[in-house]
Amino acid sequence: MVLGLDGKAAVVFGVANKRSIAWAIAKQLHGAGMRMAITYQNERLAQEAADLIAELPGAESFQCDVSRDEEIDHLFTQLREKYGTLHTVVHSVAFAPANELRGEFVQTTREGFRIALDVSCYSLVAVSRAAAPLMSLGGSIMTLTYYGAEKVVPNYNVMGVAKAALEAAVRYLAADLGKQNIRVNAISAGPIKTLAARGIGNLGDMLKAHADRAPLRRNVEQDEVGSTGLFLASDMSRGITGDTIYVDCGYNIMGF
Ligand code: NAD
Ligand code: 0WE
Image 1: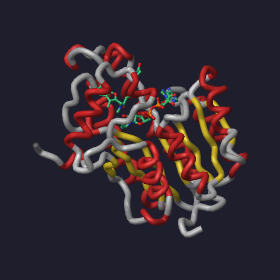
Image 2: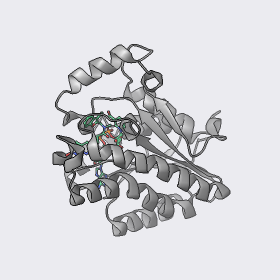
Image 3: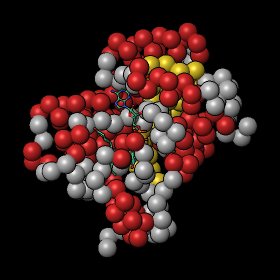
């Protein structure tokens, strides 16, 4: 296989259902011959995850709440036993308490801020630190971000601040892990109708405005983020680290 991923192992965080961006990336990595470990957040998502994973022959599922250090430690102990070395990590996880994603950012609570930054940003640092010793032949770590990190998107609020921190964390992690030939990048996806986007009041209006303004005159699909994930996992992207790649139909380039 030209991509050089055949037989290498990947772990994916953030599969909730078939619409999850994590699932779109997992399918493409599996298609390139990777051995897949797929994690889900909690018991509530276990059955859904098991049903999906059954669609990827050989894939295995593990429970891991990334806000808990002991669950991350336990996961990577299991991954070391099962796979030995790891090549790819996909971090596709974000959370802020629902009340923080409406109204004004100035009302953000200390607890809401702490939770959003912990789950959506610190978890990448914790997971990268746990994964690096298993990535002894080098590899690729990727996370998902959104344009609200750099420009104000109404109601995105504390998640925008968490994504700005996440993009900065990608640069600092890339600088640390580069000497081990581990690359760290972010994919900035345009808005997609997933579970995480369903909470938005006017998602329909937002998707329409986005499609109208984007150079490609449409919205992005999970599958397009999936193939960028495959590119970032593969040697095709071997010269890219610490960066944010936009998969948004060009929306971010427009000034007016
Ligand atoms: P999703 O709801 O399918 O995925 C979010 C995942 O985060 C879920 O699987 C959830 O279980 C997981 N998660 C939350 N808290 C967790 C915790 N403590 N431990 C472990 N897992 C936890 O929605 P999605 O849209 O696929 O989101 C994936 C990523 O893509 C997120 O980082 C999101 O910010 C980002 N993103 C989404 C969009 C969009 O419009 N959907 C756009 C750009 C970026
Ligand atoms: O990153 C996201 C959403 C992440 C997210 C979603 C939820 C919904 C359920 C984080 N925390 C929660 N907490 C919940 O209780 N996106 C990029 C999608 C998104 O969310 C928005 C957006 C867009 C786009 C919220 C407001 C405005 C735009």
